Image 1 (cartoon, rainbow, N blue to C red):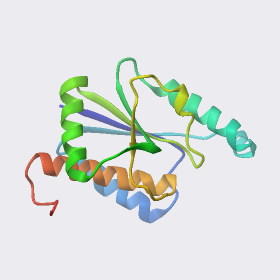
Image 2: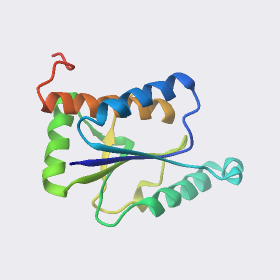
Image 3: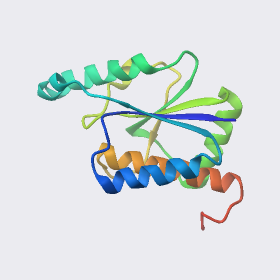
Image 4: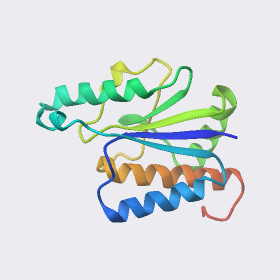
Length: 158
């Protein structure tokens, strides 16, 4: 069975987002083993200038990557896909790269993309900007939607 890990910086603070994440994590368990990892930010990171903070958060994310796993990093410059294309992309990625993938959501200032392994895939949720906490929920919903499309289930409507 496919194992999907969602890795991000910090706790989800808003109760409504926490509830949404719980709902979609539960729903996703029908299709894959789901693991969510929150990297606890160090207190001293908050006082760092933006570039330095991106650097330490990127380092913390990189330290959690497992050898050979497929990484999908959310980035505003990443590839934009509609829901059907995302479902096909997930299916192909699973077939080509094996049973484990990790989706990464950076902190409020993003990450240093140049530091990630060359085989990292970059995905953008939208040309619009979302808070990093909101992006988590949108990502889980879209991954869930992709699985329902692949299984021919009635969640997605054209």
